[in-house]
Image (cartoon, rainbow, N blue to C red; front, side):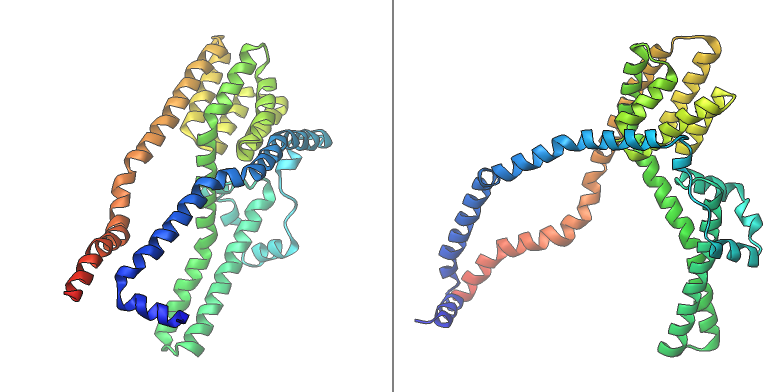
Length: 326
């Protein structure tokens, strides 16, 4: 009896599929239960590798800080390429570079230095022209559209290319905000420990930047920049305000306000940091609970589209087979 004969016999009588399904289920169950034991050696190796990651990252961060004479230099971008500067000069986009909203968006998105605005503006021009040229080519040679439709297509594509880098910057800004908001309570706990152990605010920020680098490179960068600004700015309050402006997170603004008031009126910094640290943890827990509460409504549509048809198929298929056999 060949393999095709077995397949035809099973298809003629679907009840013969039960032994095969039971065998496959048994093999899958045994494999799933025994997989942790089979993977024990690989798991121990992964844990051994992970145990040294934190120390290697700390050593790398310390070496980078010691090699640089100025902490700000490593956070700034190099000079713009000649192509970018030429595009800005030819299209006379100097006013667009000086736009306060665009400059604030670029700065908060993590692109620092005077060259960042030139690069972003030149990229907007290049992407807009590229999208417009591709739309003209596609609309003329492929779609064969009339002239008004081609003009409309090119205009829409050019506008999308012109506004596309801004959308990417906003997306990057949102990701940075989310990362800072997620890791800020841990940084506050570390800062509280440093302050209560006798460290100054500058030393506390420096230590927290070194320790939090393993968990969040973005927050470590912001705190490192704040440490450098506290060292060279004549007004310490300006360094705190710049930290709140760069992160644009409500929890950071609350801490900055407390630090400014503590230095202004001489109130204990440790007590204020303890209260704000507890509030930051409570806010993070509240945000997690909010996401968990919003999960059931979001799962309703996927369940209706994907789970219920399969469930109905599993329930109704035996009844349909029995009806067909009778």
